[in-house]
Amino acid sequence: MADAFYALEKLADALYALATGSGRVQERLGDAAIFLIRVRPEDISDENLRRIFIGVMDDLSYAQAQGGDEGNMRAMRLTDDEDARSIARRILELYHGLDRFLRER
Image (cartoon, rainbow, N blue to C red; front, top):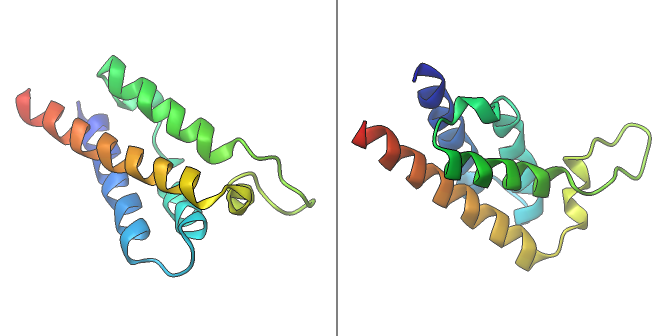
């Protein structure tokens, strides 16, 4: 269960980066991803929430890097605003879902 609290903490850090960071939402998602990559799917014990997390991480890293030193997370800037906002909303929903799940335990 301690890993789930760690995952919740990293989700909170990611949300803080999304809310307070500078730049477009794509850039802030890149900053949020730095926190989310520290979470392993098995840290989230609820199966539905785990699937959502895996989907978010897939969405964050789907774009192939364009240059030799550009990581997949930096390639997020290729995502349009609507898709980026959708990913950000799912991170928020995941945070609230995991928080609720842990409180009910």
